Image (cartoon, rainbow, N blue to C red):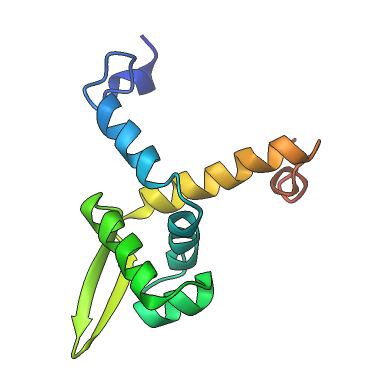
Length: 119
């Protein structure tokens, strides 16, 4: 078996497959993907996120609640304001890689390949 398959249960019989599907399901929404992209740079308030993703604060709060449920984002309260950030680097990496994969669907040589030439 390949070494990286042993680490982290990455084989086809991984006990995490159903949870992986739940993560993809949570991220199968344009607003939630935009929220994760916005949070790559750090913590933001609900109102700031609403401005960035051009949705109402109520709508953004509902999306954030789902992302919190999936342990993709976490909240920190400061007085009456709530700030959100990514729980860890995995969501950032997952969404970044998904964007790179999407670029392949529309470009022969996507921007991420042009900016990182191979040797």
